[in-house]
Length: 56
Image (cartoon, rainbow, N blue to C red):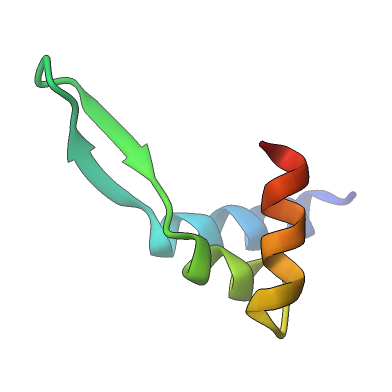
């Protein structure tokens, strides 16, 4: 994968990242699956949920 494509993906992920605090007050980055679905190119939620299941 070329550097330009990597930078595009990083920008897309950075645009949808959420910041939360854990129980100890540490910053945690997270992404909502329905937003990731679009960034990763899944047109339908039903197709993406299969990938999430495999990853878990």
